[in-house]
Image (cartoon, rainbow, N blue to C red; front, side, top):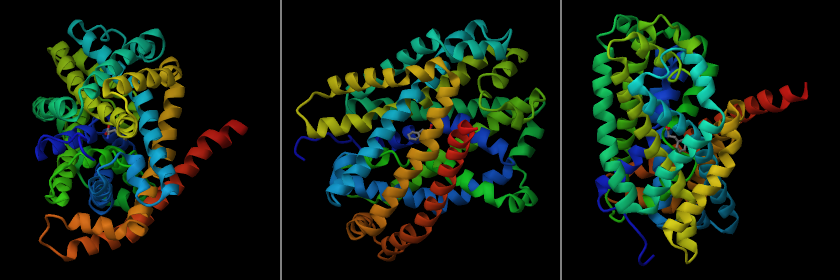
Length: 441
Ligand code: PHE
């Protein structure tokens, strides 16, 4: 593709991919999922799922992107016209997620602005309820989208790469500072124990719920199944080893998830909140409540919500980039215009989620239980059984090791396919159970 955009450097690609991976999934979803699945037992299952499923699946997306140098729709198109539908599904998924992700991003923005005065200190639960849905939620959601559109409009090298090269180190530094601070709290020891002490008893008696939860979390947090890693890899020009980049991204993302746990659990235990009870509103209610009781809680709130906000923005730009790349690749349209129009459309799609938290949860279930698992399942089938030779050759680029690509392909064909297929079946049936069967009653 003559004139197609590309990353300015290899580090730029890595920063952008880490920026996408590190997001609400790490700071909010990971500790929350860990809390509802036995803390440290989940940690262990997650670690295994990252190695066995996450990394190989990410490499599968990378090979598709870098081999074709195309957006997700046309990358799938390399396997024939019918496959384009799979790519279109991924592009729609990204668009769908950014519509409600930006509403949650808007909440974070609002909490950041309110932290200096401690506006949410008096009645954290009621405050969250009021902030979560309604005109305010719409307003802050729009503001969040505006920032997202602004960065995507500047393009790959001057927009996404530049932004994430600043954002990713900022996230890590601020989180290390927060974790060190959290370590001084009275609840720290209990929090660490809950998070880190392996509970093999729990692990082995709950494998049936633990495995799908861990695989689902890994796919979500690594931004897989929505075309992001395919599109980002399509802007990589050099032919150095994708394996090294993949390992770097996965390691940093996992460490950031653990760091979030080291922040969130001591904060919760310091207040005597049982992590499982905190629920989805944890970072806006229980944590917000912790800041109220702590010295310099206002400043803490600023730092905490700033980290969450940066993490959320660096993910939402990756979501908006996927449909943007499709239009920029295929039509004579200017990137800022495409990004702007898609931003407005995402805002409109997200309106119901900003007006009703239950709708937002429904959007999230559709994405995490149906769309994302379907997307990664299609990637696995495509790379494993259709694009296999090409993918294997691409993975071999810059690699001296001959055996690894062949092993990887068989691993994708069997292990990843089975794990992802099972996750898909379990999540879709739990989705139907919760949303269709319940509503029939
Ligand atoms: N990985 C991002 C996070 O952890 C979110 C995300 C999920 C982005 C799925 C794209 C697709 O928050």
